[in-house]
Image (cartoon, rainbow, N blue to C red; front, side, top):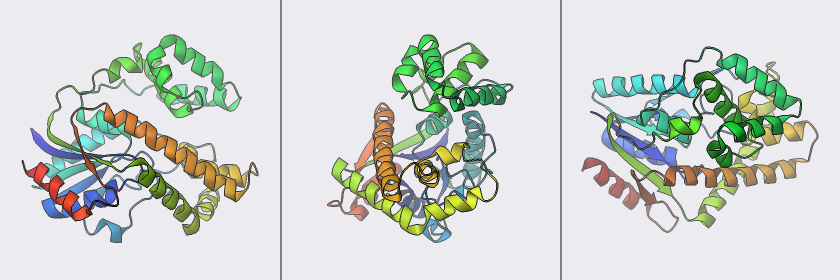
Length: 307
């Protein structure tokens, strides 16, 4: 079985920084499992690490896609598994790092995805219905065919509603049927590290990150991407920060409101991430609270990985 370290946790907890330090200690290389960092040009809002922050540790799956390129979880699964094999062949230790739960699970567990033929047509159809203001029809449809999944998805979450409907219509099986395969035996000799902070500290970090995003120029970055001719309805524009900036640019609210909406949406996202990851009993959790000395935590994690 191929060795693999998985580092997960909520947004803004410090996953990327800790993964870099661990990789430096253990001759590791990082595979990003962040569905938004795949896209070119979207740097500030995705907190994409700079070359300096990467400290010479190889990072993969950053800036792979144009904003209008379609990309599926199944594609990520295949690419990530090949990269894990490649890193191991070179005698290095792969680190799968990120907060996109489904991307992580698709790689480490026996998820089987349908053929993608027809998926783009379905997605365009659902997006058209959503754009016409009939999103409630899609959600009701999901409730009828897969109530388990519908109960876990917010009625305003188009991407997850669309994905669940796509899986059902392409396979005849609800996506919840595939997700029940979670926590089966993995093909990897795996150590799963979960990073956490107490809630007040995590929320302070989220607020600081959002403030910094706007100070660094996420509004200007969004304008520059739109100036390239990309449609504001594209998937990456619906992600945290960019969605709120689009609302501001469209005159729906002022800049201060955009900032507060981004903070609120990010806190809610962090809660959903924790709910997802806490269901996995294989994850060993480590605290990164301010009162905890990070080097000590790094030592503990390193010892865990050498067992």
